Every structure is written in C-alpha cells, then in structure tokens.
Image (tube, rainbow over all chains, first blue to last red; front, side):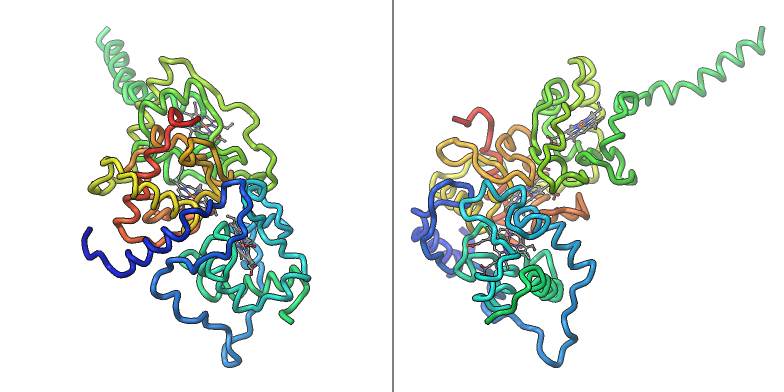
Length: 155
Length: 219
C-alpha cells in the first residue's frame, strides 16, 4: 500500500462501521443514520450559495434537459420519484413535486445532496454525487428547478 | 480477345477491394441501430465502433447467436428510454454460428485507440478488499442504483438504467472497463452516468471487482 494516507484509514473505519448496513439495491429496510461519506477533501468547504452579488439563478430549457438526462432515471420524467430505477432502490427517490417535505429542506441542503450525494446530507447513498459531472452553476439551477417542481420554498 | 482480357482484369481490380471488404456488418444492416464508425449519426442501440476495445470475443460470438437482454430499460439513446417501456422487448436479430464468427472478427477489428496497459487488473482481490470495494460499489458510489450486479450471496440486485453488470467479467475487457471509469467521455460524450474522480488504485480495484461478476457466480 503506497502512501497509506489518513484518508485510507478514515475510509477503512467508515467502512467497518458501516459493514452491517446494506447498500442501495438490497431490499431490506435501511433507516440507519448515515455516516458522513468519505468524500474528497474539497467537499469540506461549505457549498458556495449564490450570493446577492451574483447573477440570479434562472431555470432554462437547458436546466430541464439536464434534469431529464441525468435525474429522471430515478426521479422520473415529471420529478414524481417514479423513474425507471425507482422500484429497485431500497430508499425511494425523493418526489420533487411534494412540498410538504421539501419545504423542510434548505437550498443549501439540496445543493449539497446533488453535488456530494445523499450521504453528505444524512440521506440515502442511492442518491449519487454529481459534483464531477455538473458545474456548480448548473447545480444551483437544478435546485431552483426543484423549487419550481414543488412550488415551494424553504420555510 | 486482348481487350476482353483487359476488361476482365479491370473488372477484377475494381471489384476486389469491395469483395475483400464485403462485410457482414454492412450486409446485415447492423448500422441501422448501431454506430459502427465514430462519425455515424446517433443511433437507437449501443455504440459498436470501439467493440475491439470493449468486448471479449468469446462473449460476442455467443451473444450474436443468442442475444440476451443487457439493458432492460432499453438503450440510453432510445427515445423511449425514460418511459420504462421495455424498448427492446423486440428480440435482437440473431445470426448463425458461422456468421457470428465472421462478425465477431469484424467487430474486434473496430478500435478507438490503444488503451493504456494498467497494472494489477487481473490479479484476484483479497477477501477483505473485495468487501471494501463492494461497500463502495453499493454505497460510496452507488453504482448499484443504476446497474444490476451480484451481491456477495450471488443474487441479482440493482437498478436498470445502466447496462447489467451481472456478467461483466465475461463480457467486458478489464482494460476497457478501467478506462470507462476514468473517463466515460472518451467513449460517449453523452453518457448518463455520473463522472467519478477516484484514485487510480481505487479505480483499478473497482475494475477488478467488476471482473469478478460472472453469470456462473449467480445463485
């Protein structure tokens, strides 16, 4: 093992703790609070949210297409949580049209969930991390788009 | 008489390149549904223009005679993909053993470029490592959310938006899988799979793990 770094050891510990927990494809109930995932160093800085000084985030046709291309596989064409993978996941994909729950989550939490994956905000790992696929500005747009879908804002 | 000979020879010269290139892939119109060259327009089925990098010849030969479902929600390029209609409920055309051998040869000649020779790929994983990678596959990276695969008990689990990985070890070349994980964009600029940034070591171990998935380990 070359440069057996602290990160490896950290990974390993988390792995040990979580050994008993099953993954996303297993049909067993999984409601254990998730440990913080072994993310890359960059993830420790808080998500930079659009600040007043920045351009306002607008949902465009491209945002919708991005959602259809990547997110709809699980969240469904209309965001109702019924994508083609949905019935194979232990934890169902979030229904993005239901305000009742989404109101209780902040935009920062959405941003983090999308960029770093479900585990990073104490949600299921079945929600993958998109931070290496989508730019921060695209992710901000997706957060806005989900707010459009649920017609709700964070309380 | 002489001119007749010239015509005969001329005809032979003209035709011979066509004859020797006469390809079964063309004859069978596989390119109706598959890109067999990088420059082809979008097609409804998966790309084949890097088949020689991607598949194991023995698997191809088998598949072409006896096609099985790999993408149960259809191919990502299919317009009906997200609707969950089994887009390929229509059976894949099958060919005879002899044709399958010929087509396999032709497909294996289609390569994009020489993939890097990466170390370790074929060494077996230790039990401990295998458990660690399985954990990453199912949780850290949530590969299983989109791919059917085998759990440690040999049961099929997982989502269907990506191709099934249940038989990855017999179907894919290890070097190709490793390269796909490094950058799917090399092969498909329109991939629906998340891009992952992993250490090389992690990526190669994950590849080794994929290569352990084989139909014969299914229970």
